[in-house]
Image (tube, rainbow, N blue to C red; front, side, top):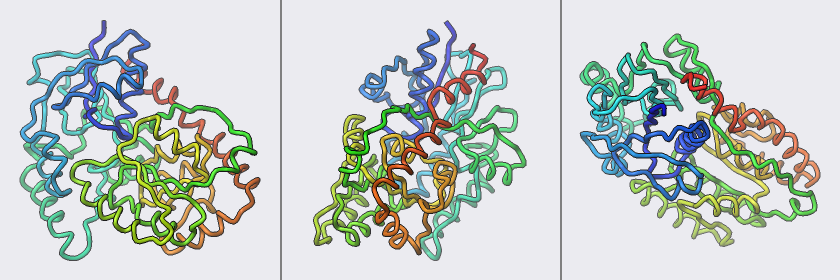
Length: 376
């Protein structure tokens, strides 16, 4: 049996984790049980739900990933610099290594593939905050580039390695930054291909946000919508890591000030909870700027929701309709225009986009990832 390793943390749910699960499931079909490399045990329940078989090899980091997850952003990035792992120091050899983490250094003798989903290899997206708030980030960046990068190249482009990247948006940024054109392998979506009858669909009455609940994805704008358009139910759903719990509490407090009591939270949802919420969603709102791709937008469309997303990043590829994308200064106005459209017109938009997202079907991702490894 071929010995294949996949490098990434699988102790939580998320977009990259979905890519790992899809890849592992394809390897299983080929008779390969991959080994998951990280310093924490995988969330075995998540693997079981997805029908994935895998083993685990514990890596040893200088700073544990659980501790790093609790740190502020700039300190987290600095500490991750030292969590370099080289395959030459492992007591196992692999026929192929898939790494979703750029700090895992694969020796030249081992065939491998890096899958990129954005920073820190894209300097165009590393924009510090303005004023004093951005000073720590600027300091960390300078320390890394001028002191640490030569010995701990956690955020460098490994020129002798093979890379793929997750969207045309990020591929264009990579070409601009490094002069290298990387193949695009869109993340996988397990499309349901179930089309709800119009008579049932028009009964939906929810506006849903689904992503990691963090400040830079701007879920507070969903609360703003709840105050402006009170006839809908608003659901803020997504993963919450330890270092974001305080932010979510602040967001809950903000939602509680709304006189309409029409915002609810679903944190760290199971797959069943996600499906249940999406069955009620008429609109899916994603306010983050420069999202690298947008797997949850594809999932929302697949479940029949009309997307309303920021006019930037990979979202432009997923939602190629101007009226469904917004700038922050027109957020409320454009949503008002969208939600006033007749249900029949909105249903037609959903049908059009559901045909478009066939481009992101899981089988395409799996076939490309396996072909790079020459496993077929």
